[in-house]
Length: 310
Length: 267
Image (cartoon, rainbow over all chains, first blue to last red; front, side, top):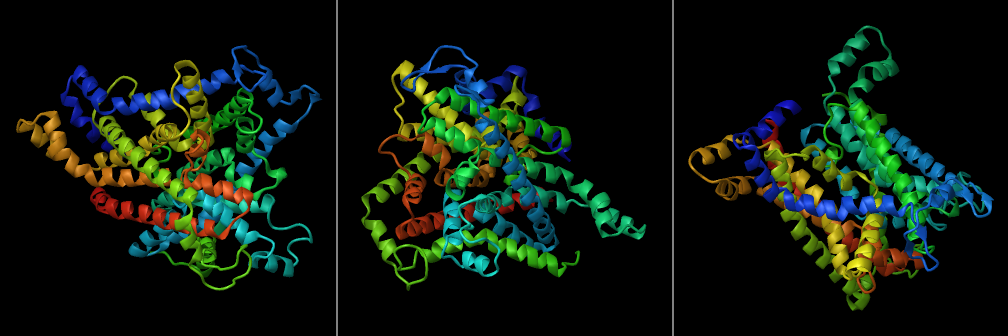
C-alpha cells in the first residue's frame, strides 16, 4: 500500500521538467529546509566541533583542538581513573532500557485492550491515551512528587504493607524515576504497537491454536512476529528520548539517578564547561543514531519514524 | 470481535488510572486550602485568585502565549510549504531532507536545546546579535515545530484525490492558482490541525525554552520548574491546572478536525 501511495504522490509533479520541479520545490519546501539547515543541522555539526575544543579559564571556548573531553568521558581525569562518567553513561542506557522494558510490559495489554474494543469506544480509548501525552511533562512529573511524597496515600499504603523499609521513601529514588518514566513514555509505545495490533491476521493465530499450540506459543510464534514493526518502532520512540531525559531524574531521583541529560545540563549550567558538555551530548547522539539504524534494519518497509505519534 | 478477558480489563483500567493520576492530583490540590500540599483542608478558589495578582506569573503567561503564537504562525507557514513540496515534487537531496525533517521528532530535546544554545552564543560572539531571550526562543520553537506541521500536512496530501488538482491544471489553472483555489482549501483542516499541534508543543515545551531563554523572558514551564526546585506552593497547582486545561483543549480540537480526513483516507 505504501508503494501505491508513493506512486500517486508524485504523479502530479511528474508532468514538470526537472527544473520546474526544482523551482517549485525551492518555493514550497525551500524556506523550511533553509530554516532547519541553519538552525538545526549547522548547530548539530557545531556540537561535533565544540566537543574537540578546549574550555578556557572563564568558561569560554578556545580554538585549541584536544581529545581531552573524550578521555575524561572515558574516565581518565586529572586525578587518575575515575569511572564517574562511564557509570553515568551505563546508568542512562540501563535506565532507558529498563523504561523501555516496563513500557513494553504495560503497553502490550493496553494495545490489545484498545484494539479489541468496539469502533467508537476504540477511538475514545485511544484518545484517552494520547491526552496525558500532550499535557506538560514537567507538571506530570512534579505531580508524582505529590503522589509519592511522605504523607501521601501511596506512601501510607506502601508503609502499611511493609513494601518499603523505614527511612527508604518511595520518592526520591530509582522507583520514583521509573514510575515517572513509565507515565511519560507509555503513550510513545502504545500508539505504534496499537497500529500493528490492528493489522494482525487472527486466522494465523487460530490456525496455530487448531494445530495444538498453547496460549504462550500462539503468542510467541503467531502473534508476536506480526506486531514486531510496532514493537520496534515503539522501543525506539521510548528508548531515545528516555536516554536524554533530564527533568524526570532531576525531579524524582536523588543523586544516584544522574543520567546523561543531567550530566549535560550540569556542564551547560553550573560547571560551564561547554566542550565537555558537547562531548557528552555527542555520545548521547551516537546512542540515538545507533538506535535509529537498528530500527531501520528491523523495519525496512515500515513507515517514517515518529509517524505513529500523529 | 475478540473477547475481552477480565485480566485485560483490570490491567488496562489500572494503566488508565496511572496515566491520569498525576493530572487529577494536580487539579485536586489546586483547590486544597492547605498551604503545603499534604492532607485535604477544604475547598478554595484562592490559589486561582492569587494567580491574577502575581506579576511574574502574568508576565510568564504572556511570554508563553506570545512565544506560542509567533512560533506557530511562522512554523505553520514554513511547515505547510515543506509538507506540500515534499509530497509533490522531486528534487536532489530530497531523501536527505526528509530524514533531516524527522530529526527534531526523534532526538532527545536536550540535544537540540544544547545545539541551539551554542549556535546562538557563537553567532553573538562573531556577528554581535542574537541575545538570548524571546527571539532565540521563537527561533528554537519554530525549528522543532516545522516537522510536526509538515508531517500532518503531508499525510493529508498523500490521502488526497489528486485528480481534482489535475483537472484544475487541465482547465488552464497555473500551479499557484491550483494551489490557492483547489489544494489549499482541501488541506486546510490539516494546516489548522498542524498549527494547533505546533501551538500545543510550544506551550508544553520546557527543555528547549530552558536552554535558549535569557534574563527576563521566562515562560510558564520555566517558572514552574524554578518553583518546584524551591518547593511546591499551592498556586503552582492552580497554574498547572490552567495549563493542563489549555493543553487538553489544544489536543482534542485538532483530533476532531482531523477525523474527516482520516475517514476519507480509509475508503
